[in-house]
Amino acid sequence: MSILSSSFQKEVDAQENILRPKYLTDFQGQDRIKENLSIFIKAARERSDTLDHVFLIGPPGLGKTTLASIIANEMDAEIRMTSAPALEKPKDLAGILTNVTEGSIFFIDEIHRLRPVMEEMLYIAMEDYEIDWVIGQGPAARTIRIPIPKFTLIGATTKAGQVSPPLYSRFGITCRIDFYNENELESIIKRSAVIMDTKINPSAIKLLAKCSRGTPRIANRLLRRLRDYATVMGNGTITDDIVMLSMDRLGIDLQGLEEQDRNILRTIIQFYGGGPVGAETLAISVGEAIESLEDFYEPYLIQKGYLKRTPRGRMVTPLAYDLLAIPHDRKTDENQGILF
Image 1 (cartoon, rainbow, N blue to C red):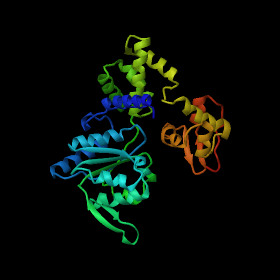
Image 2 (spheres, helix red, strand yellow):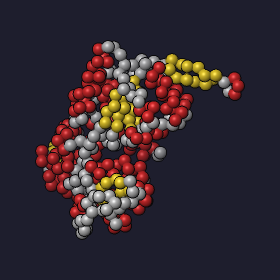
Image 3 (cartoon, rainbow, N blue to C red):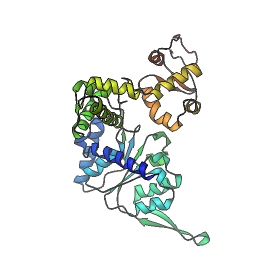
Image 4 (cartoon, one colour):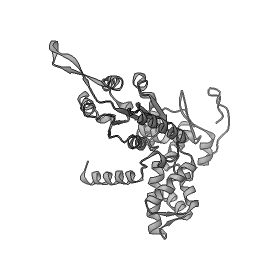
């Protein structure tokens, strides 16, 4: 990575950190998760014990990393963060585990990408707070168990189905984070606007919430761009007109759909007769990585009712035809039994 791109990424990360809430009371939405976590955290603190291991599930941008930091703050504990792809060898994981402090938080993002040998090391660490280590080679090799401080593992994933059952079963607390509704996003936008010292009209907040795909990260990203448009093309205040102008220039509609979203739906209709089409074929057709297609685009399109997954592949719904103003015959697919 170049120095320029590295500096830019640090600036983006710094902006994100400024907007991230530090405690559960500041975290907007996900009320059931917050209520449960507050109980578990309070009970652990009253027992002077570590919090049970936490598993966070949800699409990108919904606050899994933020929640991990909040848990550490609420527990008044040190937190160490990494991602599964960064752990290439067992010694990388062993090095972290042997250096955690008592009661600390160890956060692993994209935990579904852990290698099997790493998972096996984590099994023992999570249950017995020990790790197995091999000393010597060949006939002289032997395994010893090294005790480690009691810690809390927080694993985050966008693909819970790819986490092995033995690892999944070792998490005592599971939190499934859903897309945010518009009222929750409005609260997030209001809070972020205050932190950013940006003026935004109440009606503009509602419009922006509609365009944010149910995702706080996207809401905050769009808010920063709206601030730029308001500064250059307005009087500094984000109004309805600024939102509409900005969304049009950015290629985002009031459903939160981007040009690539519409391109995916249009490709399925025009090239594959509305589907079904396999994910790999579709990804190649639209020039998108299959991971981006499955993790970013599809969940929202499915939630909005424009796309559905079937055993035979991806298919569009009548709403997709209506969205793109493409004529279609409403008939029942005899194999699927679904109106399209």
